[in-house]
Amino acid sequence: MTGRGYPGQLNQELLKQLGADVAIDYTKQKFEDIAKDVDVVLDSIGRDTLARSYGVVTKGGIIVSLVARPDESELQKHAIRGTALDVGPSSEELAEIGQLIDDKKIKVIVSQTFPLSEAMKAQKQVATGHTRGKIVLRIADEPK
Image (tube, rainbow, N blue to C red; front, side, top):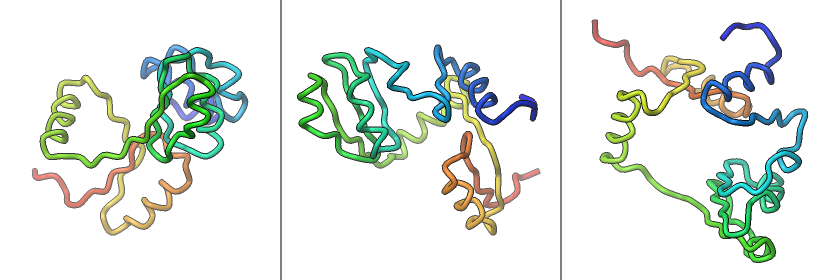
């Protein structure tokens, strides 16, 4: 990917490379105007985004929120299901995820790597909400 183009365009290209059928530029479009009758919404934002998601889920579908509890009255109104997902990783699950990455079944996108001494700088980057991919903290140099 080159540095040409505006950030939204680069994000659109990345989403297409990752397999998205339709990529929505939230700075220019409302997802609820485009997404219709989806089976599953995975909400990682909450607040207004969660509130706008109820109407895009097909009857019998589900909203899974990583940050909030879906509103029971909205779920009933739209005849959909909802749940909040809150889990802690286990060593077995992390090993399985690592194997999926090694087998190239999951593509990991690392946007920036910081030395551990710059953890505060890394946290500030994450807090911007505009990081594409993962931020990695390097604890030590890899063995030679």
